Amino acid sequence: MKILIIGATSAIAHETAKCFAKDGAELFLVGRSSEKLEAVQNDLKVRGAKRAESYLLDISQLDRHQAMIQSAIETLDGLDMVLIAHGTLGDQRLSQENVTKTLEEFTTNCTSVISLATLLANYFEPRKHGCIAVISSVAGDRGRPSNYVYGAAKGAVTVFLQGLRSRMAKSGVAVVTIKPGFVDTPMTASIRKGPLFASPRKVGEGIYHAMLKGKEVVYLPWFWRPILLIVKSIPEPVFKKLSI
Ligand SMILES: NC(=O)c1ccc[n+]([C@@H]2O[C@H](COP(=O)([O-])OP(=O)(O)OC[C@H]3O[C@@H](n4cnc5c(N)ncnc54)[C@H](OP(=O)(O)O)[C@@H]3O)[C@@H](O)[C@H]2O)c1
Image 1 (spheres, rainbow, N blue to C red):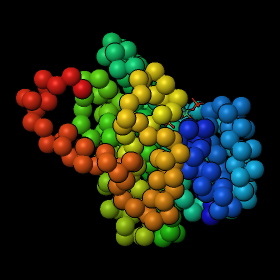
Image 2: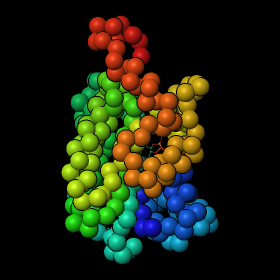
Image 3: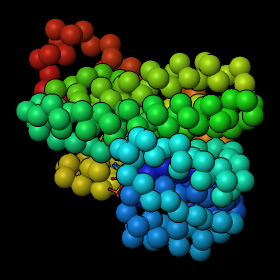
Image 4: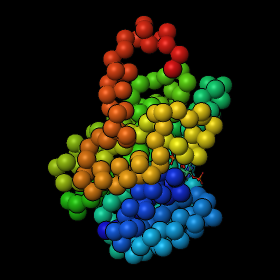
């Protein structure tokens, strides 16, 4: 299995990569920190990856996406799957005060993902084979005052993937939307932990199984699906009064 992982130093992506490494996969790891990438790369080799190559890229450099994908294809001699995992949980208050910050958050969490998914879909479609998995978020299911910039970016990604999935169904390419709830990773380091928090390992393993099965939309852990069903059904006048 030849797998491109973008945002490979993410705690969740690393856990998914460990599962693929155990299967002896060939991995092409993309991240912006050479130190972190090297650590992940070495770990995955020890865990059984047949091959683990790395590529340095700040994903906000949209004009470098095509070259990175080309390099992955040439290095691994083709691709079977991709996991797009990078993201930032920006400071909502800062974004409210500064539109430049809002747009930066959108570049990282939305525009870059749409750029990558478009380029990768055009690679997989004529080959009639492959899987494009993207980590979105339950935050994209309903806008909340505490994180609606992040939520809107993830929501746009979710809708984009919904359309892409229907397009790609005709060529047998799976498009997997992953919606984790709270996960205990560096991204949530400053948030007080509660019973709804999952481990990156549990979520990473869930992503691995979803990718192998070519699932459509996966909530991780599963209980976020009914929770979000309820959250989405709350009428606006009531929702506005809730402090969530
Ligand atoms: N943790 C949660 O509660 C939660 C919930 C729902 C969805 N998610 C989503 O899950 C995904 C993985 O996040 P995580 O929880 O594993 O957090 P994480 O460990 O902090 O991973 C985030 C990753 O994104 C990378 N990244 C951010 N901006 C980048 C850029 N401009 N260029 C290249 N890489 C960039 C980071 O690289 P550096 O390490 O170099 O900064 C890091 O590897 C994200 O899409 C996140 O939105 C997380």
